[in-house]
Image 1 (cartoon, chains in turn yellow, purple):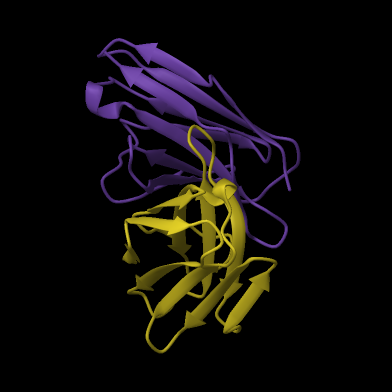
Image 2 (cartoon, one colour):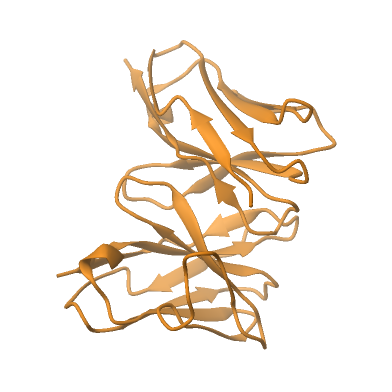
Length: 112
Length: 113
């Protein structure tokens, strides 16, 4: 089955700096890659996703890139703010709406 | 996106007992899933709840331990049976949206003593 690895497990950045989280996946048939943000005690929230026919997608301060050949995708957060502090999860699936396999998560701390 | 609710939001149960968790969606959805999130860990898929047929379980999860019902396109239940402390987790349902993105319910925090 699919295996998703996520790095780093923790990330501390200064407010205003950029944060980058990387994920690799094993199943070459995976074609949908969402990112979730989970604040303490809350449900995971979908923040951005990318499908395999696209190499990059942006939404304000966040962007995701996908390299299908290398089977890895990354989340980029620019101009980080304290409210970006949370745990971020990447995931992969063979089709949008199909079951998700999650990475281990990255705890991001943005220091004021 | 769909509004998803879960009941109960949290519970403390004794070992050996069972708890049924409900997931209600405010619109009809084709795909519903149940995940487990152990303390400080990532999310693991338990099963896909299929409307009108038996749920599809992932490796390591069995129907006798986690029976699932899906009587219609807006509702599903997950039962955690014969609980042990190792079942202490957050249980989340999710649904696939109109563009097939997945949204999660608020979760049920279960503590087994």
